[in-house]
Amino acid sequence: ETGVTQTPRHLVMGMTNKKSLKCEQHLGHNAMYWYKQSAKKPLELMFVYNFKEQTENNSVPSRFSPECPNSSHLFLHLHTLQPEDSALYLCASSPTTSGGAWEEQFFGPGTRLTVL
Amino acid sequence: KQEVTQIPAALSVPEGENLVLNCSFTDSAIYNLQWFRQDPGKGLTSLLLIQSSQREQTSGRLNASLDKSSGRSTLYIAASQPGDSATYLCAVRGAQKLVFGQGTRLTINP
Image (cartoon, rainbow over all chains, first blue to last red; front, top):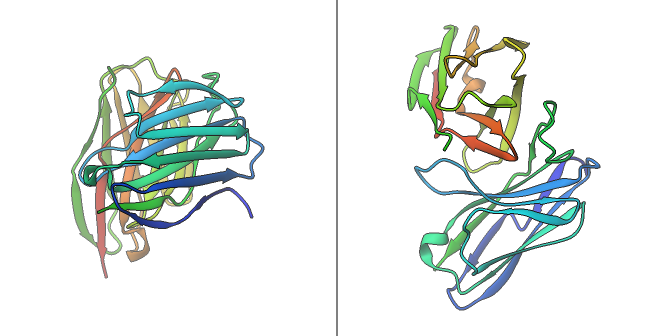
């Protein structure tokens, strides 16, 4: 496996379900990100982790719970979601979040989530 | 708060044409600007990254320019091909965040 992988690629869940999205990066990076892409809206940053520590939560509702057990893996735990949470969820990684000029983010293919 | 705008929202051109996609941003205090390509229902593929100290970057038929003082970037695509059809996203990086525009949906007609 190379680059950034995400599983599952598609997920349909009811509002009372609990599910998790998984992201894994094989690039040796130390920073990982969750983004949400809804129809007709720009990509929105949700969470940022740097060296396993959460450094940013962009006012995301608590029904989304991230977990970063190590620098290579990032999870997004979902519970009691709403239909408006249906979107493409993208994971990305970069060497760090230090703000250095040479940082480039690499994205996974995304998980298409549908909440019924 | 940084805002990124991409014009036009959609563009349809015949194959073989040269074209320009535009991106503007409101806060010039950026580290870099990145152009991505996104195919329908798929993730993002990085095309070009321009550092704040650079004026342009080139990769094959793609050329991206950056004018930080005026808050503008352009992506030039030469000799367009049907395979270039996709949504092109511009994103600027300040502090930790990458702020995205809404994209330009490009269709190249054979």
